[in-house]
Image 1: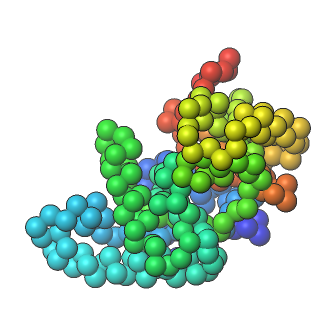
Image 2: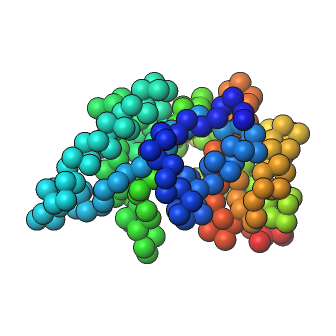
Length: 257
């Protein structure tokens, strides 16, 4: 197993196989088995209904021992964060709401865990017509990405790639951030962001020999999926996220799946 392997609380393993495919707890152990570099991750299970708790119905805070379950959950999350130190990266099994960066996925200290969890639960409830599940949580080591500018509440915009796999091979790849996603944003830190984005694309193109073998190895173990990768300031590529291709944004492409 790759030295950046996951550390998973043993108590969280019991129901992984029953979780949806897009849930990190389902695909991440399979990704690790490929040997692809990926940020160290601790998976934590929320055994209580977080949406119900934060909605604050008349009996939500006391029924069925939910407060005790929540305290235990926060304690496990704190323990996980202390393994990596701060800042660390926080997400649910289905996403990180990077557009609300400082409120959600960038965790600066243990005192902020509950507010960040609440923000991610709120995002999960609004992210689709049906609320995204919030039973799986992941605390991850912080990666110092090669970002040249920031956007979306201070989110570093780095050299990032989304590749699509299927049939045991890479089908296509694109820069993770399309120009249209950033056009008109007022919080972008550098007016020359378009040039930085183009430079990031050229870096990804030039360094395919570094990251493409990872994607091809992953393709041999999965079906039709998207694979997200990013580059650190030290020039190291990591696989950070995956989802079924049919559930992933795929911009204009001659080989669109």
